[in-house]
Amino acid sequence: MAKATYPDCQYVSLDEDSMLGPGVCASVTALSFADATFDAVFCRPVLEQFPYHLFIAAIHELQGVVCRRVVISLPDESWFFFIRARGLRRVLPGSWQGTSIPYLFPEPHDYEAHGQHY
Image (cartoon, rainbow, N blue to C red; front, side):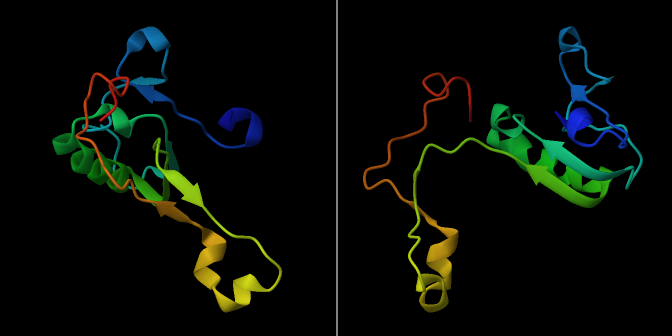
């Protein structure tokens, strides 16, 4: 998708699994690029695959190799709600952005039940 959308950019794909044919075979928790190598990093779907104790390490690695922006996409099962009504944005600016509705009775996370997502 990135190649088609931005044909003039240099695109580098990364994955731990060499069978997927990435440009670079490595883990996002141990990147071998110099600091500020990239203008932008787009990370999806990656971080939900890592145990919680490696999540912050991965974020720090991404911050190190980028000089401008890191875009991260994570799955979210929670309900999302926003109101769009004429003039409401001036009165309640936060409602325009929306809000997630918390679960009233949250269940403990089960790694296997969530498709191996943390």
